[in-house]
Amino acid sequence: MIAVALLGYAALLLTAGPGPLARARWPESAPRLAIAAWFALTGSAVASVLAGGLALMVATVRVSADLAGLLAACVMALRSQYAHPGGAALTGAGAVLSLAVLARITWCTARALAQAAGARRRHRLQLSLVGSPDPLLGAVIVRHHEPAAYCLPGPRTCIVLTTGAIKALDEGELRAVLAHERAHLRGRHHLLVNLAGALNVAFPRVPVFRIAREQVSRLAELRADDAASAAAHRLVVAGALLNLGAGVPAAALGAGTADAARVRRL
Picture 1 (tube, rainbow, N blue to C red):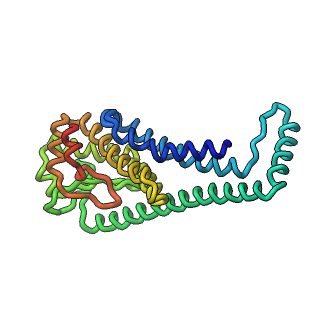
Picture 2: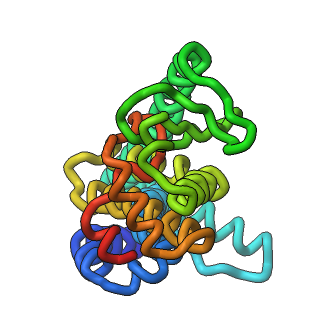
Picture 3: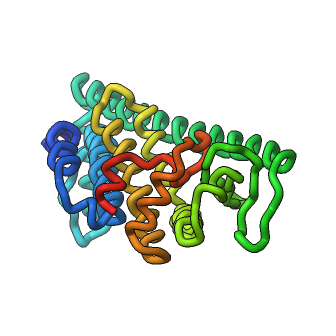
């Protein structure tokens, strides 16, 4: 019954949980809390599945203050569970479920982090050939007509600006863009986005993980927008987003991925 309750709870979270959270309006004003809510939703679902598998593997006994009595009860429960074929089958099913889910999440997360790190490393090599550091701005300047701004997280963080962005932005907008990128680096938003993406890759047929990945990416940008609004007026930040029309590399985070909803929010 414990396993059924845990697996049923996970199913309820995965089916009924994302809709109300995705339609809610409060995440617009509290993006950090909303990111935590999405990870609480997906993490609780995954933890419930793992715990449900463990509940099938290990018999439940009543907790006692007497250690000897507790151990004896555990041994008796295990013997009764393995005394018939059904108990062994349930144990095998629980072990397969828990180990498969845990192995899948571990593998996809490790691969996502490794791929992102490799992409950032290759991009840094390209920047070393075509970019020039600007100590006053604290950014790497790349000669390109498209207005773009983004940051590369990791051990050697950096902010990248194109010459087109410097020409398109006035002083206040440039200050807002730099604050936006520094907020991404300071908040380690790339780890949150990568983790949400890894869960989506691990379970592509479960819609909640796809929705969570999209929402976490959007909320990370809202959080950086709020940090930029502390350095410049919100309308200045909105103008900067409109002037940055170019996209950003896949391994980076940047203000140039703005949409109409973000501009209206500002």
